[in-house]
Length: 69
Image (cartoon, rainbow, N blue to C red; front, side, top):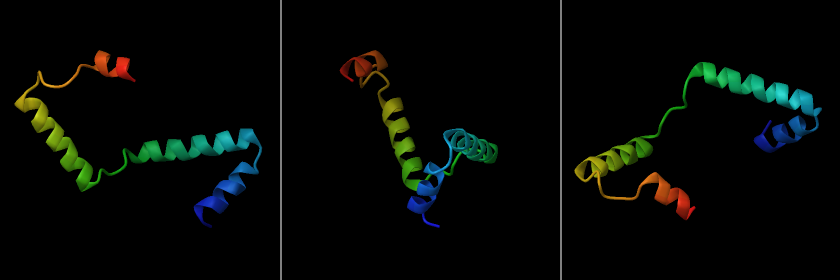
């Protein structure tokens, strides 16, 4: 069953059962731990960490970013 067919089948269920199913899936996934991180994302984290530590005062504070949003 492909994703679209599965989603259609789930949407046909009563809402209470959809929520129960979603909770069961999320609980199972949470028990397995966080998803694996791709090498590309790991490299990006390292790049940003190095950029921060090279000049921690460079950039904008969270309040400024939130205001812009």
